[in-house]
Length: 376
Image 1 (cartoon, rainbow, N blue to C red):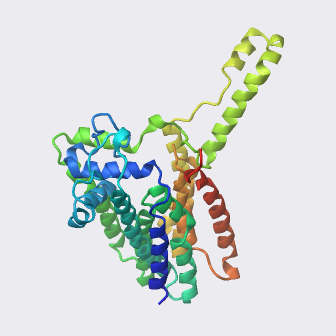
Image 2: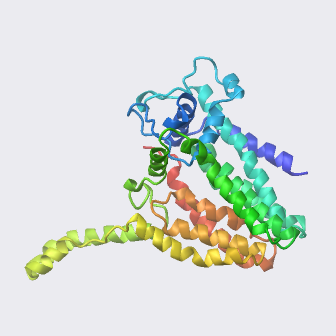
Image 3: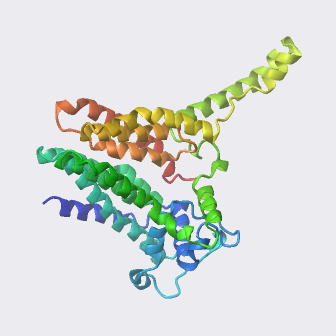
């Protein structure tokens, strides 16, 4: 009974935020709409508007088809006035959106949050199928009213709520299967088939292009832009941020103390001092460290002990990814915060999970502050 009015209140708040500050991610997604509308599939991951834009498509194929759906349907034709350049291929120096374009794109994020609400309710209900409703409501409300999703999606501009809704719905399906019965003999094969199909299906149109090898390599190049370096612009609060900070301190110390101690050192030691810095880990080293760190989580998930253990494994693996992966974005902490919210309980028995949730949420939210608007 409380879901419809809560959804209405939430939607009204998001509508009020339509004219607020928006980041360059708004321009990024506008350009992706234009690419998927005006170019064939074979050019989606190649097009850069003749070198005049940096907002090239660099999300997985499934999301590219989501953008294509938004830009190629009759509702879009009705909402955007004739002659509006919102869906045109524009250079970065001439891409100021119209008010209609802003309303249109903001509305797509608002409507896509339906998937978040459905996924959140399904996951919460699947985790607590026989417990009082308060267990479901507590986690559900903490998810759908998470301030990070409001900041990132409806101010900064992204579609994190929808993507996390898909994750929650998937977890809900897994937990529902455990609730109904022990997995049948062919259950694992069915799960593998569904997972594999979901993963491969969006790639098929690109494999069917004239030069599939070049297409796949180009997509992978866009999805893994290693040339951007170890840390993101604002340094997600992980191990590599601490590593980079230590490197900066070391370089500063050598720069300040070097001239004072150099006369007392031999030439060999002085040369070592000049080259003193921490080497940057390669993507391969990060990948190996990440894989080794997630082994306990994978083992726990494959054991299929309880639904709670499954969620613990998901939280653990996602946190390892945030802490050790190469070039992590600040928003990646959401893949830990949101599943962890499922474990929150409104009683003393859940004290450990509650404490862990509030600690990670607090520091995660602080790490997202740089993405909000700052006066120059």
